[in-house]
Image: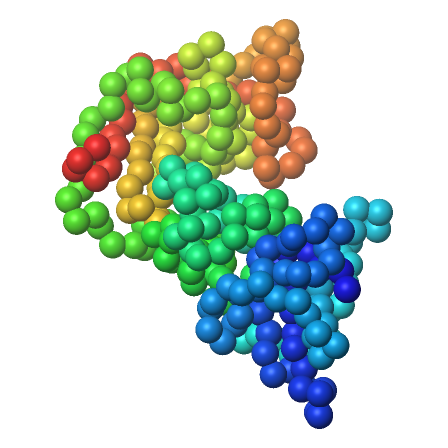
Length: 302
């Protein structure tokens, strides 16, 4: 018998062959995955040291096979489940969200695992490998990280940010120009205001910061190209739904088209990302900041 962290240990009834108890393997005692195992039982939530008998078997869950580039082990449908599970996310999504929530809270893996009543090795496995943890595991992690189950599952990806409740004691403060420049960083997704034949519009663009100017690429006939030759507002922000806090930076200044081929090539070389809409975005637009302001919402004690 060989297991990996995150596998299910299923104990079957000798008479009927049906599962009578199961639990997640949250600790290994041998590098080769042989018994004994630390098992968190789905019916009690307790972790015990288990030496599996002849009535026990392992259900492998979503482990990567590096040689095959896919998954190894039995399908989750091959054996009874420990309980209800949500639709399986893309491989690795849950782990990335757990790790991001933990970093936002400034928690180590050891402290997070202690709060969630799981082995640190199992938390490391969840964060670093494709996995489909049980609903009970996700609920414990959400509680330990002070976030919502839906945040860890990614079920709110198509919803606008800011759906949570306001902080009990929020603090709204103005940012200095130096802080604004730091938050603009080097690149990301921002929004530029333009005037179109249909009226004013605010459009998302992939941007870079080069020599203290905001630059983005578009097509000559695309809507963002309407910014050229006008004074525009350019905005970036970050919203932390789980913590009900965030920041925004607003840049106001003239937008100009880059017509010098050498300068356009230089910007091509300095660009960190490609425009998400795809090929054909050959027009560089430069926004020279005339005014830069920003605000941040945090708990009052920060």
